[in-house]
Image 1 (cartoon, rainbow, N blue to C red):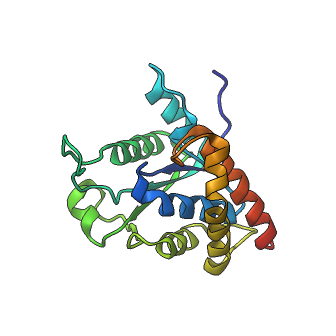
Image 2 (cartoon, rainbow, N blue to C red):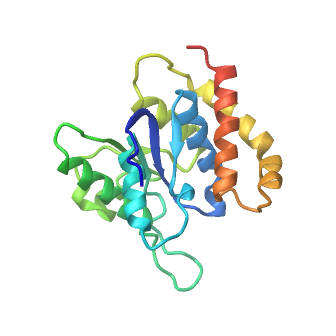
Length: 205
């Protein structure tokens, strides 16, 4: 497989894939796109025996990574276990960034509740997670405070406009993807296209 070139315009998005998270899923894509950056997620990776290798390769190709650790509670469906994918992928990114001298990856943690990361993942004590309160505006505000780059600097109201554009197009995106969930490869790609188009229209460099 060809080596993916790392780009300052790519953001690895590590979030839970569940129905109740869809609003925040769209918020992350809207906010990242508002900065002129491109979100990437494991949704793009087909299932295979080399999946972990491909996840790490995708994360390495991105200059930034955003990790939402808000799903630490027990799943209501049996078997009742917490969701480990997000902290696991965060661990991959952090370990890989620390191993590669001079190529530190900028990783950011988001949570719904203050102080919970100190208990759920105590090895990260001293890291300041962005608390979004499980709200769209909270996610957008957090992104606005972590991404400080030359060029495009969107406001939270502008990000909200992009988010509303995604919500408006959600039904059409699902219909085009032939899916009842946003968490498919095709739906994710279409969401990113719409978000990028909306961002170019709304945010002026």
